[in-house]
Length: 162
Length: 340
View 1 (cartoon, each protein chain N blue to C red):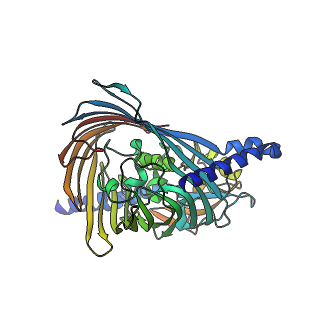
View 2: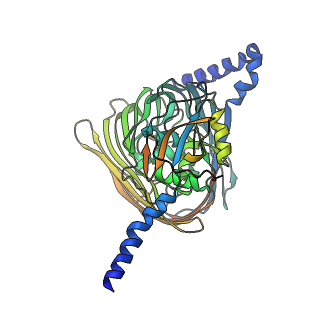
View 3: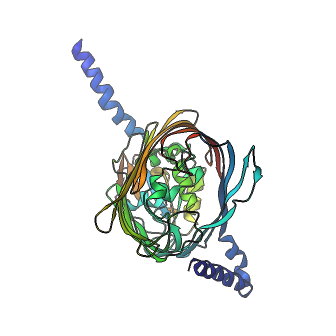
């Protein structure tokens, strides 16, 4: 009986999070596929760009990060894994930046809107489900299981996913 | 000298405006770069030793200009002590004055370095740089953040952010180039302000879904009193912010030395904000201030604050302790603050 309970406990505490991680989509940080609109982004700069601490790229071009709406599941994950906080807890921070004349990232409502914004805005940066990347945008960084990766991970994309 | 700076800034803006007809096709884009905002707050003070007073503290106007170039402009013009009302004196507008709080240009140098020229909030600690009523949990301000160092500096500042691993380092290095303050309201005047601040963000690298901001800052500055043969001070400070689950803890501590090694005073505060429910926060703060030739002051503050909207705060607080400071009278205060 104890063995069964112990096995159940190990499964519940160890395996279940792993299973749920497997269900979480890999997030791709994207820039425009057009060279004129594209911008270089380093993995360790993503957080600074989204906190609006880094406002320019290395050529002096202003960066234009975009967020999904604050209740979007992908925004919640991106926020937690890259910015280490929830969008809700960032309200005070964005007020502070507004006080210093800095606007928060532009907000779009859907992943398709994100692709369009990034594809046709100079120096724009966004993020979407890595499986939704198309030829309008170029993935440069991937966020998976609390890691920010410069190389693409193995993606298991369903061909039927919307 | 400050008036000179103000005139320079106004001249630059005026020149930009005069250039407008010459660049007819870019007229709309020039104006698109401007943004207007601000904030305001109203307090009802019921002090222990004075009569009840309703204060309209400030009406602040923030103007920014950003046309996606390496240069940006920021200006904040405040109408301070706009109006007050007491039962005995009625409505009173006599204390109102205009305060050009901040006025500067930011120039991007590299992706890690920027320079700020003009009048800015002295980068000492967190509170001084974020002191606007809609940004802070209490109506009253910790005395250590007002009494120990000049709150504004007119000069030059280099600043930027350097990422490392999952963290980042913010730096600010500054030096006063103009010493005159625009208007003294009985405050000690200082000059020759120089200093630096570094802050490490995401110190604990929390990944929990209830994680929040966590940062620690170190501050150092030197300055002297403006009066002839005024003492030169060195101040060392530490500040922190920690958000986790429903808690937000913050604090700052400063120690100040006079040039010859004598103690020049010290002060600190420790504040907690606990999310009770429905955007109601329970606020507690302990603070102290020691200054030479002045009685020590200790303060405690308990209160509740409601975030009505992301840009609006409603505060209720009771202040106790010893020592009298005009800015933080002991007693009850309720306040409404809004950013727009």
